[in-house]
Every structure is written in C-alpha cells, then in structure tokens.
Image (cartoon, rainbow, N blue to C red; front, side, top):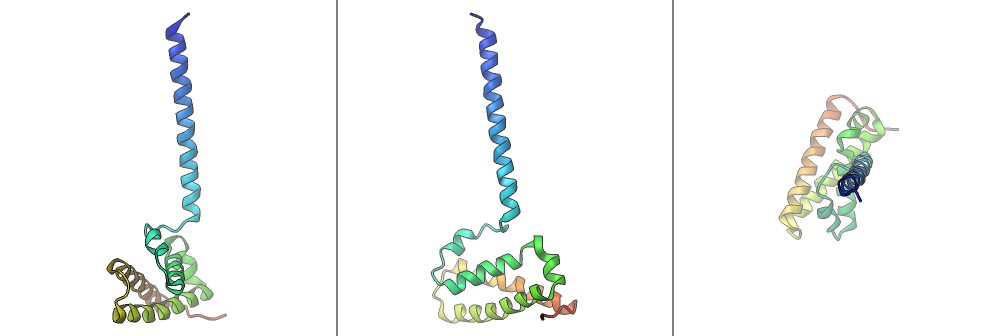
Length: 133
C-alpha cells in the first residue's frame, strides 16, 4: 500500500473539485451580473408596503442603470420614461417630506434617485432629446 501516492491523488482530486466549484460560482455570478441591476438597495425597496412607491423605485433604479445609459440618452421613448419618472418622483418626494411616514434611510434613497433623475432629465434637455413616439 503506497500511502504517499494515495494521499497525493486524493489532494489532487479535492483540489480539482474545489476549482470546478469556484469556476461555476464565478460563471453564475457573471451571468447574474448581466441580468441584475447594480444596486445594493434591493432589501430597502423590498420592504416598501406601498406598491406605487415600490414600482417607482424599481423603475427609477432600472432607468438609471449605467449599462443602458446610452439607450436612454438616444431613444425618445426611453427619455419619455425619464421625464415621467422625474415628475412622479417630485410628487413622491413632496409627499414623503410632508407626511414623514417612512424611514430616514428610505427618504434619503428616494432623494438620491430623484436627484439622479433630475440630472439625467437636464442632460436629455441639453441634448435636445425629447419624449415622443
């Protein structure tokens, strides 16, 4: 019985399995990154009871995604969504500020989304990309 060869073979097989598991994890993470929104605020959004506010947060986060920025800046139908979200965001922000019914972290999140939407809206106006069919 040659223990050294057996031990070496076992360690090689173990290393092979670990490397393959790590490879598949990386592949899955990469695939998930192609289809996910790059935000860590999912838990914050998922905790919202008001469906209209939740939908607005999800749509605003999606339209501000850097991977589709060029499409938003060149396509009038996408720019129309930016203008709609900005108008709705102003109303939501005003309601949040006057009622004070949500947490401060959610209030900051809504404020940040609205600020980003306003910047994008200004950029669209400066580029003369208006909404329309």
